[in-house]
Amino acid sequence: MHDEASSTTGETTSKRGLSRYLLAALPLAVFALIAGTAGKMLYDQDVNGKNVSDIPSALIGTKAPTLDLPPLEGANLPALTSSAIAGKLTLVNVFASWCVPCRDEHPLLKQLSNDPRIQIVAINYKDKSDNALRFLGELGNPYKAIGIDPNGKAAIDWGVYGIPESYLVAPDGTIVYKRVGPFDAQSIEQGLYPAIQKTLAVKDPIVPPAKP
Image 1: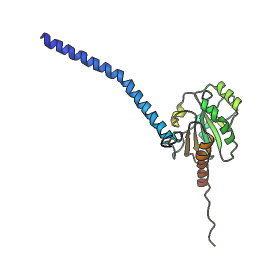
Image 2 (image 1 turned 90 degrees about the vertical axis):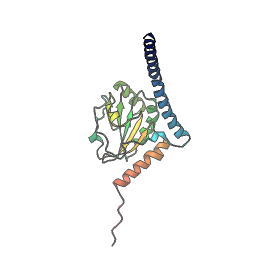
Image 3 (image 1 turned 180 degrees about the horizontal axis):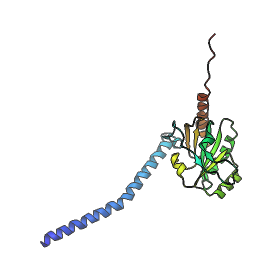
Image 4 (image 1 turned 90 degrees about the horizontal axis):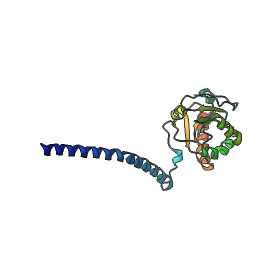
């Protein structure tokens, strides 16, 4: 009897020890998975020549999520709603004043705002209004409308990975291009501009003259 009890106690202790080990190992396994995924992305970018900034989005080719965001008070701009982008080729930019890459890309957005083919609007992500206003006052305002997203719900709806991110929305409301991370001269020339040209070509197809 004593031997059986000792054996049972030993098995229970062993199981508890195994459970503790598995619980301790779980966070390491999760970390390894995340690190492995990030490493694969960096490997693809550096070795295989893939640009992880142009991550395919499930939303491309689908209608843009509904927009109904309140305005940035003090910016003297309208709220960001679906009607604000309807019928216009629109670049929807997700930014925040605390985002360093947003600051880096902002001069390029200012230049893009002079392009008559598009309008630029913004989702101000989890930001403080005073800081956002200070950001725009310092760097300039390329936006036709700004909507604030204090809880990040709109960003989730749009499938935002991290900011800055930008979406090109066709006049019919279809998302046709997505940029993850800040724009630079290369991504504009090789990514955004071709998407603009392709979208406008579809909108205004060249009709051959009728045969006499």
